[in-house]
Each structure stands twice: as structure tokens, then as C-alpha cells.
Length: 311
Image 1: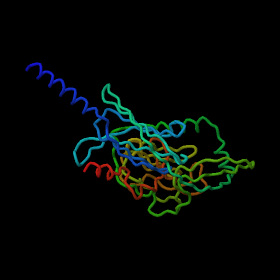
Image 2 (image 1 turned 30 degrees about the horizontal axis):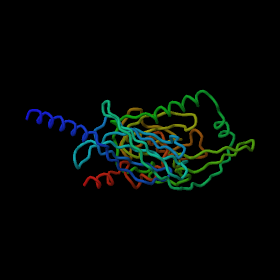
Image 3 (image 1 turned 90 degrees about the horizontal axis):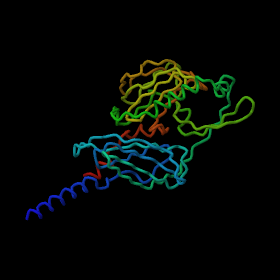
Image 4 (image 1 turned 60 degrees about the vertical axis):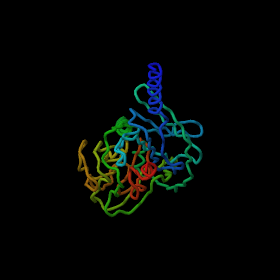
């Protein structure tokens, strides 16, 4: 009888351990557009860490991000959620989502197919004047150092930085759209040669000195007069999720300051590599540029699909 009880106790221990580490359930869309953000929910937790990578058909990693914990209002328990930026340059096809999770010394691994659909972006031709041509071809140490500093900010990840989950607001109360996210740009240099780039943000024109507002609640992580982007402000809204404001005439915030949605961060200008007065409004998720306008209609953290699966 004692042997049977001991056996039953051992069986229950093993069973509970197996249930505890049963493969987590993952919720995410099966299709995504270039320049969009894919939300992945892990109904298993809290895990110590979760990372998500997007690999192209050649098994090359094109995007990667960490997950953070979010408390569900339904069961009041934390779940892991990762926001993954889909590059605007991603070609249509079948990609692989690779998820890894850790709890102590235990690790799990899961792969899922994601189909990236086709999306075309327009091309814009920009003829550089003397000042812009010099800025574009500058190879100074300042330019390189500022690039490294910005990259360090955009690749940082603070799991506690959960400041804003709702929709964003536009940086101008009224602005004229002059250039869109993902536009393919062809630069014509003074010597007739050409180069190309991808426009990572959304441009709005308005009169010089117009108030530029924070798109959502967050913490200022950079406020700097930079060589290429001019006077620049970067605000963190979620772990690894940032909005950026370029070419400002003035900056009215400091690093470490908390700002509310709609709060003034500076004024519109023409500083840095700019063809005219405008604000360049950009959004980064895990360092990947994504379309900020899509979040004027949708929340940064759309919990609806996940919560509907839990009900």
C-alpha cells in the first residue's frame, strides 16, 4: 500500500511537471504586410524570457525582438507578448517565425510560418543642392558617432517601459503630408550620379515654429542636435517601441522626462538633411522602421485577438 502511494505521488509530481512545461500556446496572425507590426502572444507564463526572430526563405534573420510581460484583465496573470517589426523591404513569400523561451534551466523552441504579402511603395526623385550633397557625402567621425549613439538607443530594451498601449496621435495638429513611409528615394547628386534609399518615416509640412507633439505617453530617451536628422527627439512608449521626431527648430524636452500624448516636444524646422520645413515622424519596433500612420487607427498593443481566444 505504501509502495502504491509512493508511486502515485511520484506520478503526480511528474505529471504536474509535464503540465507545467507543456508547449505554450501562441497567438499571432498568419499574414503580415511589409512595414507592419506583428503581435505574438504567449499563453504560458510568466517565463523568464521570450525572444522572437523572423527568418526569410534563405533562413536569414531579418527581424528580432524580445517579449515583455502583460497582465491580462481576464485571468489577472502575466503573459508574454512580443511586437515584431516587419521590414518594409521584405519581399513577399513564406517566412519562419522562430520563438524561444526560458524558465530557469528549461528552454522551449517553436516555429511557425508567416506569409508576407506584397506591398508596393512609390518612388521619389530628389535632386540634391550643394548643402544637401555635402551632408549626404560627409564621412566625418561626428556623423558615425551619432549613428552609433542612435542605434544604441533603438536597440535597447527595457521590459518595464510600458507607458502607452492605445492608438497614437499625429505629431502636428494640422499638417500636409509631403512624403510617405516606405517611399523609395532616388537621389541625383551634383555630379549626375545617383544613389537610393528607403524613407523610414512620414513627413508633414507646416509653417516654421509649428508645435510638434508627442504621439503618445512615454519617456524621452534622446534629445540631441544631430548632423543628419537635425534637432531630434526620441520617445519610448513600450519596450523597444519608439517614435522619432526629426529636423526640429527647437527641442523642449530633456532625456529622462516623461511626456503625455499631445505634449509639446519641440517646434517644426529645417535642420539637418532636409529639403524644406517639415517634421519627419518615424516609428521603430525592435529597431525596425514601421509605418506610424497605421497606429493612428489601431492601438500599439491590440489585445482583442488574444483576449477573444481566452474567453
